[in-house]
Every structure is written in C-alpha cells, then in structure tokens.
Length: 285
Ligand code: PAF
Image (cartoon, rainbow, N blue to C red; front, side, top):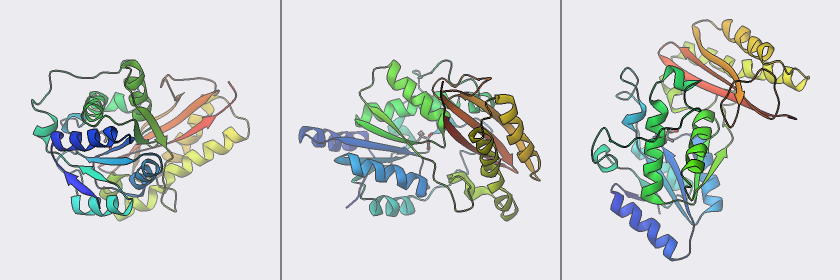
C-alpha cells in the first residue's frame, strides 16, 4: 500500500523508523505528472532500497518569472496510481509552505561553474532552485540513495557536485533516458505539444542519433558533431534551437575534442514548449 503524507514531520518519522529498523531509504524526487521515465527511477529505487519515497512537489523556486509554473501539468491521483504500481511505500506531496516556511528562502544552495552554461544560460536561477529544493528533500528525508533521470543530464551533474561538495551522505544514482517508440525522450512537458509539434518532435532524438553515428565512426571534433545536430534540427519546421553543446559530462565544461565522458546536449523550442535531450559518450580520454 502506498501511503501519502504532506508534512515534513510525517515523512521524516517514516524515514527515521525505517532507518531505526536497519533499513535503507531511497528517494525519487519529482514534480509529479509521472511517466514511464519516473517509473524507471521508482523501479531502480524499489530494487535497491527498503523504504522507497517519491516526492511530488512542483518547486516554484526553479521556475523563472515567465516560465510555466502556473500551467505545469498536475495529476496527483494519476501519480499515486503510478507509485502504487511500482510498489512505492510513501509519497511525500507537500504544499509550498511546508517545504518553504519562508518564501523565498534566505538560504540558497548554489553550485558554481556547472550551472552557467546549457540550461543555466537560458534559465537564470533555475539550478539554484533545483539544488535548494533537493538539499531540502535530502535534509527532510535523509535518503541513502536518490534517483535522477539522465535526460536532465546537467541537473544530475549539478546535484552530484552538490552532494560531493557538502559531504551529503547520499549516493546520487543516474538512470537512463526512457523514450517513446519513435525516439522522443519522455518529459512531463511533452503534454504541451500540439499534434503538429508532436509529429516533428522525434527529429530531436534523430539529430542526436546522426551525431552518435558519426562519433561511432570515429569523429572526435566537437564542432563537426555539433554541426551535424544543428543541420538536422534546422531542417525541422517550427523548431528553434536554444543550444547544442558538447561538454564534459561531470564538469559541464565545453570541449573541443571528444574524449572521456562526453555529453552532447540540446535544448529546443517547439512553439511554446522547451524540450531537452542528450546523448552521452564514454570514449577513450
Ligand atoms: O527533475 C525534476 O523533476 C526536478 O528538477 C526535481 C529534481 C524534482 C527538483 O524539483
């Protein structure tokens, strides 16, 4: 049975009880409107942890003033069904006041250096909102494992670095991107797409596959790889490129030659909707 709680005291009490009994606590932080990508995180947590907690909280702090906070899709009943189906023990679905006794908070967690490029460039303050709420969730629940999707690759790198820098006793686990059969990476924001936008959206993943084929064939020049992605994206009607970048997957620093752990990341706008996708290469240094 999946239990639902909305207060810090109750989720903390449940996590404390699991730890006292010698159990491990896994956390899947989400903003709800759960899809198969989130379910893969829950599945990983269920296979590794004794108590699995899913947080469902649309965090106002990570939305810019002109972003989609008010229209962000919500469906708590559907979310509870997905959590029950994955054997989640506890859903933490707090209100804003419960997470932020004072809003905005005076204390902000900022990860320097990994947050200025890619999504950080077009969404100023976004990652401060993410790291502040994730640090809060870690402090409230005290998970030993926390699960994040690799689709949000920059977020994953930023949260990992926060955990390292703050000596947080949590292993940050990255889980592979889950895609629709036509290749579109799953995202709650896919719900915004019109039928026409949805029809062309798989072109984003196709552009990354074209670049991957070139890398598999030995291409190591980042400018060439980026050029391939841009050319494929430019051919998609109604799509505007926000960025196409090749960076080191851990530091998010741009690279000129591909080697080591490389992230090829894109962000685009299709009409009103901003979508991101990426592919990761593990190459010889
Ligand atoms: O990836 C998300 O859904 C959010 O950024 C997260 C990690 C739940 C923090 O609000």
